[in-house]
Length: 463
Image (cartoon, rainbow, N blue to C red; front, side, top):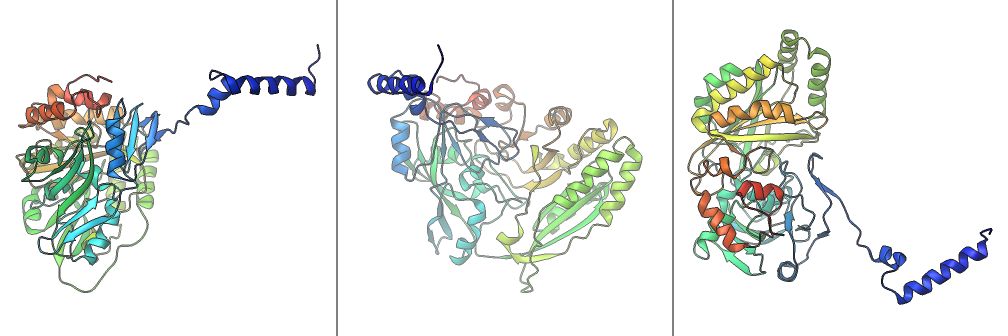
């Protein structure tokens, strides 16, 4: 029988009528089906399709969600972590609607922010309030909650991570309880929640201990890497903040010092990102990668021709850099005194095996703290970062380098790629058992655990 337009319309009318009285109609089911929105991190290395993504506009809404829902809940910030902290097929909770300064105290130099506030939006309001963050990382894309959850840090032997300057916070637990935590109220929870990987609950507001505004003079130059390592003790002691950036497959590094200054002569940072320098290194890697000696000579020469103008400005305008070239990253913190030897081994391995990577490393110092899951818990640290451009597979490169970090009792940065689980991690942190016991108490059903965190903490997912 021929199918006519009248026949089709009649069949559609019948289906629509049936759908009006039956809840199982494919048409009505499709109309009701929730739209699933994929999530990925900044580098594209982590992805998931959560059942739902929510952005509550109040703490009451977050508490209601946790109290009256089931399944895994993972908080998400700016999606700039490289490790698998976020992926879930449950619920992603964004704090993007909870941003900005809540208030400040001019006497104690403290300021409270909503936890979803991007670090890039904290400098100006703090400056207007007569305050500044004590130290900052070299990027400011992260949210405040994400930065403290992973113990994100800058550089300087006298300065801790962001987490070390948290003086209070509000935590909403799996049961929907709202806890205000500081040194006097819920002190055990406060200590642990300053670096929690989002595994204790959803942090909604954070109070930071700050200082008065200050100006910074940034200077950058190219120097032989071995010379820098021989002189590292002097450089880190004589400068407020010091780091250097070893260029792979070469003999040179970029050395950066950041010293406080009263110089009123502002020299602002130039605009733009790393595109030109990364493209240069990428092309050398592509065309000279098979000739290690020639490659090293070429990179040495090109690096020494680069120009790095001085920068003088307010601190929050100097510390952060534009990183517009995507990559994946692994970082470990070794004891401060082990930093030079650890870096020498990494650089030697890269040259010896001509490993497939061209992005520079980072080498920084951070002050010890007493936070259970901080990479700097109980010891001054030297953080060494290893990068791989997003278009290159990172697995073999990171796998070749990672055992060197283990040799020096390295602790992985929680927001960056590593292969350790609870069996290894528990031996690296003196207060490991204290944290895991508290996590079990606050979240007995494991609602804040995804597969990665279940491995990290050595427990099974119950949802």
